Amino acid sequence: MVDGLVVALIIAALILAVWCGITALQNKPTDDPHLYGLAAVEVLLLVQVAIVIVRLAQGDRPAEFATFLAYLILVPFALPIGFLLSLIERTRWGSVILGIAALTLAVLVLRLQDLWGTVGG
Amino acid sequence: MAEVRPTNTGPGRVLLSVYGLFAVAATSRAAVQLATKFHEAPVAYLLSAAAAVIYVIATVALARSTPTSRRVAFVACSVELAGVLVVGTLSLFDPDLFPDQTVWSGYGSGYGFVPLVLPILGLLWLRRTRP
Image 1 (cartoon, rainbow over the protein chains, first blue to last red):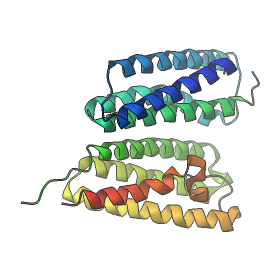
Image 2 (cartoon, helix red, strand yellow):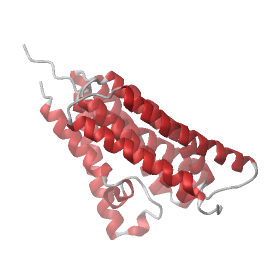
Image 3 (tube, rainbow over the protein chains, first blue to last red):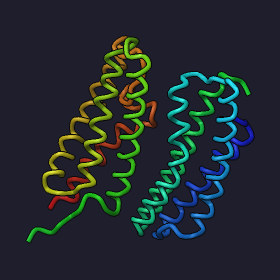
């Protein structure tokens, strides 16, 4: 994991979550701008995942490798699934769902960083 | 004519999403635990698997929103609430019983207490959407 990227990723995910929260409070569903924001976060995430995959291929092994792999495989799906559900639920509750997806992403990235910490760097 | 009150739209869809999330999380966790280190803490890991099954049942039942599935969801949420209360209490008083974390240890403290709040919200939602 790249520390700077992890921090940026978590902050970006939290901003997206707050943004969705505000949209929900305004009683509105998600809209195109949310999709652009989400895409930006997802790109950051995929860069991070790609870096981790390269490091794993080079032989780095984090603690609880199986758990780490499970997180790594599932984490890219959080935002797309959240957005898909927010498209089905065209009310404020769709915005809540995408917000929860963004929060989930932040937590998952934190967990990944935790496990990766044992590798160093 | 009884009004049809679906459990799977509006706030219900949010609830359903979080249930789905926990179904995936608990299932993956139980799968990893059972596959890689079952012998270390069989009770904790079997419990993880049981919790996973309950989350999956609750998710499907809430999503289907038929009279039967409402009853199934009610049972699943009740079992879940009982589970988190019993396991949470046991894990505080007799930590040796659960040497490794489960979703329900410490009333779900490892998961931001969501496992404790979720069944309560589920039961409240079922009551609110009662036909």
